[in-house]
Image (cartoon, rainbow, N blue to C red; front, side, top):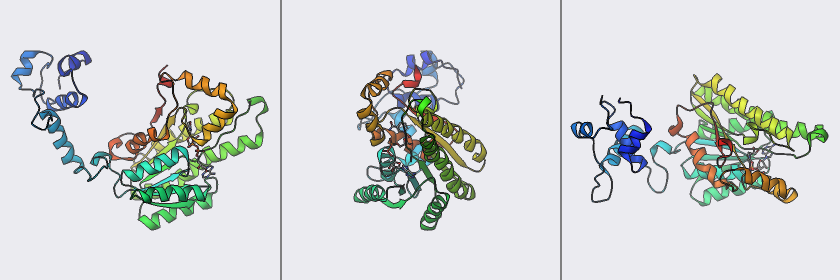
Length: 332
Ligand SMILES: NC(=O)c1ccc[n+]([C@@H]2O[C@H](COP(=O)([O-])OP(=O)(O)OC[C@H]3O[C@@H](n4cnc5c(N)ncnc54)[C@H](O)[C@@H]3O)[C@@H](O)[C@H]2O)c1
């Protein structure tokens, strides 16, 4: 493979991303510097000609290769094979609201059967109903993630119903804001119990099934608060830091068993959890938003692509990764 530096790639490919990728792959067996025009002619590297449908030959080559590897594109509006979740069984804890709700709907749109699990049965039912109204498949489960017996019963119910469990998204979470010097012990326990212990119990119960079946993808919803510090919510930060390390530890422990464990670290998203803070502490809220280079709140739907990516074959070599969806916050 020729050693083409970035300038060379841009100098030659210049245009759309698809063509850049395709040309690198198409020329993988060449031992030549493709930044030289002479070599490009010599090896007949395809140009950017387009067919009558406006598709580049190069893009067409990559499409065919992908179709061979990952099956034909799904019918309708679903994602292509690489990102398809057809025939997959997913559980989304905290699926009754906010990020969990958006992710549950997104996974269902990508073809997954989804168990929407939440401590609020009404919320879980309403999201499952929304999914079914969009011709997706979903059931609602009442679940308190801090209760081992409930968590084990949930894992068993999904296995009995579907014969397998392929995806677990741990989105159940709470917060409590108070200066650290006055932080109530009871609130510390409550936040750590739901966010950290609850995530672990779900990983453990569902992980057992995944390890036994030799495959599965777990996605923990951590937070940028698990990676950097800020004031006023010490138990939350500690719990999310714990989720980050839980993710890495389980990823290492279960990698050879075929189970991937990753986390998403969102910045500030427009959900009921955050709207309380927006109302009670508008200055703190605005300061947080202003710190992100993109300077705006995230919308729950903006996590769907990330969740589908981590749940699907598109990320099959990725485990133990903490993927920040943060408008550039951590780039500073
Ligand atoms: N919204 C954000 O800006 C943001 C940023 C970073 C991380 N997160 C994380 O994303 C996750 C989802 O947060 P959200 O903003 O969607 O909040 P949300 O309040 O809208 O949703 C949380 C859901 O978890 C459920 N839940 C709470 N305790 C539970 C328990 N013991 N068992 C089962 N379900 C329980 C709630 O009923 C609710 O439906 C949380 O883990 C949160 O820490 C959110």
